[in-house]
Length: 165
Ligand SMILES: Nc1c(C(=O)O)ncn1[C@@H]1O[C@H](COP(=O)(O)O)[C@@H](O)[C@H]1O
Image 1: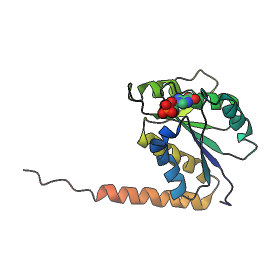
Image 2: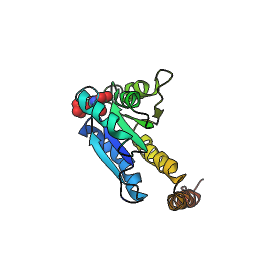
Image 3: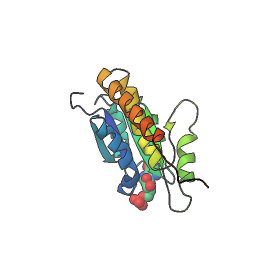
Image 4: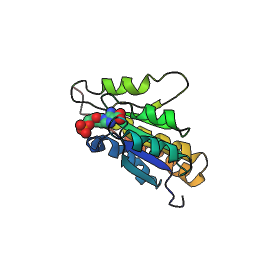
């Protein structure tokens, strides 16, 4: 990777960072150049349009978009760019992220958003999914991903449980 930003991590509010940092951390760990931005379909619609319209020309390979509640950000980005959008439902205060999940996953046919699990695991997996996509064209990244999986497998195999009666 030559340092050029290839993944955009965007979120509806800085209150989403606690969750979305898990996507950013995966990209960082794998050495994938990314940017993190607050962009809101509801609160900054012009900025959303600008970000989406420039994404392809800026060379973004994908956009990871996280939002909570009436989470229209991922879908609206997908509507305005051909760059693949990975949606992360951020947990919400009252409906625990079910609202976010349904807002993101139930896209109309023709404008896909790849939707991940609610919360930290979904954010981390969106980061890993972006790595996996980029690794198809990048042998070194593919090797790093293979080693990550091997370490994870070894960690699970060495897990112990309390003595059983
Ligand atoms: N769902 C959206 C959008 C959007 O979809 O454009 N913009 C902000 N938000 C969400 O509002 C929640 C509360 O935001 P605040 O904490 O700023 O009040 C956040 O989870 C954010 O993603």
